[in-house]
Length: 288
Image 1 (cartoon, rainbow, N blue to C red):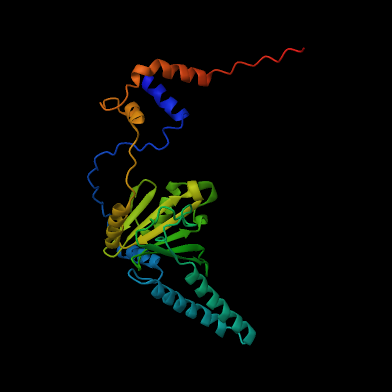
Image 2: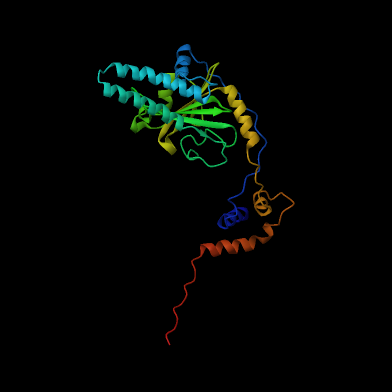
């Protein structure tokens, strides 16, 4: 009980905020189950890449995107004989290409980015050779946002924020999301709000982000580059901040090199009581 009260006191004094728990020995790496993927489902997973290939540079991604737009806009241009309308379509195509180019951001600037609090906030790290492009894909019946992630200048991952309307409004939960995803891509490994599929060429994940962003996501990546990215992030991670001796004493009373917090438990109790008791009202001044 005294230990719990001590923790409460530290929280009230604002001293517990910078504390970082003592790191536990790393657990043995969990071996992927590698749920078998059929040829049909493998093709569906490959379609998630949208015609882009891992290892492409930023300029190569833009070039493929421009070519895809050529095919789409050529059909629309040929469908009209209005010269002004044709010119307008050509300008629209150039604007789309420019918008993709301008979306490029490097995370090596040493500064916060506008994406640090966003649906992709957990998909990149700073000062690790990572960068990103972003575009909307809303042609035809699609309504999704594609993020291209680069490591050391090469495309290694794509994140798709997909239209959450694929899940009925009255059934927006992970169970429904899982049934929709597995109907399209087959059974996967399910854990912590994610469904994972693995093939020889890629790893794909469906991620439930309904709670924080009312959104659903699909991630497709090169698992070989993923290992390199993880190693770089670990090497560049900031050093752990050690807790001060007082906090360490409360959390781990077996430590020998800290003040004896338990010896002062009565003082702790008095402070807690003082915090919980209403203040004594001050009497009004006497009139002269």
